[in-house]
Length: 329
Ligand code: ATP
Ligand code: LTN
Image (cartoon, rainbow, N blue to C red):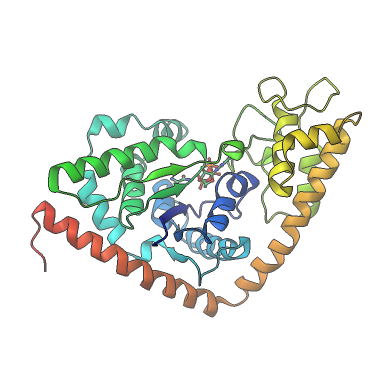
């Protein structure tokens, strides 16, 4: 039996991954390695959409690659690669752009949010979801593990795959999102109505920040004016978020945790969550440093991944080109 294929990507847009990325998506990436044929990519082309400094792109791409390995992505089990190393991503994107409606692309809420925050949004930011569709369709992925915020991009990917298949003949697998409900949205520690995000750093726990800072951020998390530890994301978003985090890191269900906290105050919950996250971050940080100290080995692993990814991506691209009427070289 062949295993179902998985593809997912993460942008190298911050110096460090955060707890939301880990619990919402990356944890699933690690788990799926045993049950799926997994392709994971650091999407550096996507990072260019907001015109970052070149030195920053380089450094963050290397660091993201190292962080993925440190988190548990095994380059022997998974095809782990840098997006720009496989030129087919850009090539397929163009073909998909030509079957995407302008109005359809204009409805993407992440573009609306991100462009509203910028002085001048690029065309690249606008076409970002089409590049994402190419990432996924090149590998004939069956499933795409992501957080809730990516659902609309997955819907577009499915529409494009279906449209291409019906217009030009069966070419692409139509992928499904793999969104784990319980941790699909980790909220900000200071503003529990917003998702935890690197753009709100004060309420975001970065896995590579000093352990003392991690502890401090969690211990000063916003809760509410009650005193009972209960799970109620509507009315007690801060407390519920901490319970979700503890449950996800330890495997103990939220219900069991709530029972175990009976009679205790918020301070106890914060102290435990801080300890648990620090215990996770410490060995993670050591491993990332080790990996970043051996750049030659990192580059070797990048090449292994890129070679393996290219084999699959090139076959899909040639097929799609022929179907659209482009003459093979
Ligand atoms: P930004 O800070 O610009 O919103 P980000 O921190 O969300 O970006 P991405 O690279 O967009 O980082 O996300 C990587 C993965 O992590 C995606 O699959 C996304 O769905 C998931 N993710 C990000 N933030 C959260 C969160 N707060 N809760 C759950 N999953 C999340
Ligand atoms: N848009 C995603 C990152 C991303 C991705 C992908 C996720 C780019 N290509 C392919 C899954 C599959 C994000 O912002 N988190």
